[in-house]
Length: 556
Image (cartoon, rainbow, N blue to C red):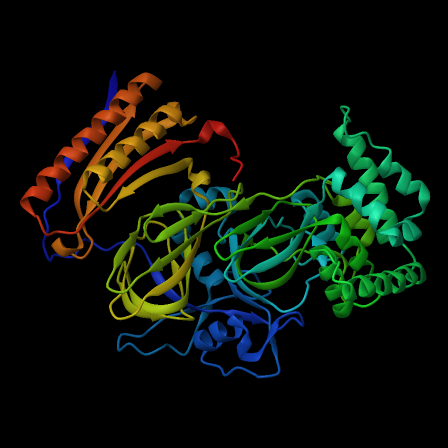
């Protein structure tokens, strides 16, 4: 059994501040007034932008997107303060600052993406449907940008994730073949647009035999292309009949959820082929705290609600329906994957009692959602890449590097690589989101068990959870280290009181024994401290850091 290194320490609790490293600054960010945005102060985007910029909200103006990043179409500006605390008159873009100080990105990020932020962070307030669209992969993005730079403004791909703040609706991906057959049979107007021969292609797919996926995709591609390429007269006639039929069903109280959506879309975008196309796509309804992620070449359309959105730094969109904007039907129909089935919904990984982490299968980004109650503190640990924080509710003290300031709704902050950020609340809670480069890019995955009760049941729960993770985790042979942290706010503002760390290079059975030994040692120490400090509240966090370098992409 070989151990690289191990150490154990009872951290000395004192009032001395730790050495401050890293970089933090506030950002002034951009707003987009697309016509699908919520109007005036009804829009969360308008409220965040107003508090962030100091500008008033226009009551009759749509506020659709709040951009936080370096993209040229909506750059953020660094808000520097002079020595007396006032704002400097001269501001530079975050992109410019990073180009002058690339170390804030971290070495690994620079090696992969150069001297620019690899992600773009947004808040969306959606009043009516966005276009049916898809985002190109890198190869197609370069081609489109070269051919039409006025429309496709960069050469990057755009995987993205939407994390619901309110109830949030979207169309995403094609329905299964079984559902598609039901659509073809129950929506007669589709046949009138695509023709009976395309209807037969769908109905003749055998559900009970092995069917080549590529054949199914080919059929779906043909049907979808035929639909989206239909003449305006054919679409208008079909929608007239569809509206009449659905309105009658509505009077009889017999509409499905999808049919209710179709009537809603018809009012927003009359005579648009996208209304019919919506029947072929999954209707996704997210609850607050649920997230949806989208890879390249997947059709989707956000419909209503408010969300946090994060994506690779790009603004490339290929549209084909539900929009007055430029459509590129041929490109969209040729680029789609034509995968079928309901998309995966992320609910977040609870990394501590106040924070959930959302990890889509993309290197460029991840998102943390933190809700911190009154009179509470927590630490965002040091990471090897940059982060952007946005406060959506409440207020709290934001500390790190040489930065220490009360932040509140509308504040946006950039933290450079290697910066530890702590947040504390007093009389108000705080709700904030963090975007950063994916943990998987740094070849680390975190499994965490937490406990705030040292009752018999509490100890049993920790032991049970850890045993399960130790014995069942498929990544066990990639475990790099075990960490046990005990935080006791009453002994020093949330500072780590116990830190136990073991880095190991063992076989699978050896790692299992070592993990159990670390757990037992940690519990023993906590019991001793609890006996000595009877009235001290604490949190015990047990972390397993896994090296996932050899696993490739994870499924999210």
